[in-house]
Image (cartoon, rainbow, N blue to C red; front, side, top):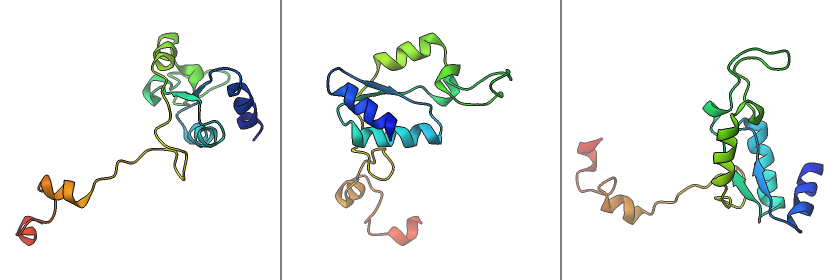
Length: 118
């Protein structure tokens, strides 16, 4: 809660870009921040680009975190920062909605011989 409040306070006076780990905890924090700070932009680093390659004193190989990303990957993510795709909700991720008419038009449902295509 303190992190979300701090980000919301910062966003009131200057632009904010959210960059979290791509693991479950990072996605949960990002979802809270979308709700608490809707004007913040979001930057993403792919898991493959933020995974520890070797064991160290502090991390095991395979751990995911922004700290494992290269400076170039971080710069690219910040340059591509964008508004969130949803308003938080239960998952924080957008889901495209397809209408029945769209699916029928594409031949994916509602055809006369549906039983024969299953």
